[in-house]
Structures are given as structure tokens and as C-alpha cells.
Image (tube, rainbow, N blue to C red; front, side):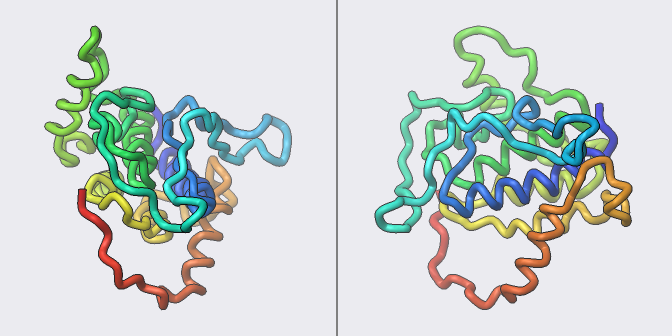
Length: 216
């Protein structure tokens, strides 16, 4: 089990990585602890977080139109890792940015608590049972013994709409209270997260989009 401040560092830096990836039109599709690596020990990158394995990455933005891909649901189509997949992925819904964030939430809770309540299912209908358990476990229950930001993050991401653009800087700022005040002393380099905050501050939220995200 990892300390809350270590997991908070992973949270904010992961969000900055996903912000970059999503801004290029891609969803990772398999966010889980095994796909996060730290740089080589003894090098300048030893405290830098990396997200690897793009084997399940898909596009959330249509390259030809620049628009969000269309919503679809194919219940026989499951992509991802059962333990960390979003409920939408279990239900065969088209992947979008919200799914990476839901998988990240499960990853963070697992790293901090050492276990998720749907571990241990076996057999052919494992994915169905895990999905049912995820849907039946409230954020309060899942995040008991975690600092409040973990629950706030989970509550936010499980309520996102299919084509909603995440407010990465707002999500990063949720973890401020758990991070140590001095970035130099943090166990993981959080420079990426600090840049997201500065970039968003400059944008001034003036391009608020009028179109309502689709609720699915």
C-alpha cells in the first residue's frame, strides 16, 4: 500500500499525461498500475512518471471532422483490464475520455488501499460480476479510509457524460490538500501537473462551449 501523498503525486501527474494524450485525440483504454513506470534510477528521470502500453488506445476525436466520435454500445465488445475498466467499458460503450479517468480512479484507490472490492471473481462471467459490483459500490464505500479528494475525484468522473471534456486542472487541484507544499520534496516529479494549472489559468475559461455534452 502506498502513502496518500505518493498516490496524490501519481494522481496529478497521471492527469497531466492523460491531458496531453487526450489533447491529441486519443484515449489510452487500459489505465492500470502495471502501465505506470518511473524513469531509470540514478538518472534525471528517476522521479518522472510514464504511462506505457498503447495497445488498446483508440480515437475519441474523428480525424476527418475534428468532432467527437459517435456513441455506440456493443455489449459483446469488452476492451481493457477487468479490475480497472470503467463501467462503460464493461457495458461495451464506445471509449471516451471519461473512461481513462474512471480507470485512473480505481488505480489510485487500489494503490492506496491495496485492494478493490471486486477482486477475486473467477470464471466465464467474471466481467459481468465485476461490473455489477462496481455499479453497486458507492464512492463513499469504495473510498472509505482514503483522503476526501479520492472520493471527490471518483464522484466527478463516474458522472461524466460521453463527450464531456474533462477539466484537468480542476481535477488536479482536488489533490492539492494531500500533496506536500514543496514540489522539490515530492516522491514523484509533478512538473507536468504544475504546467497544466498554469496553462489553464492563462486560457481564462473564455471559450466555454455552448453545446451540451450528451448524457449516456
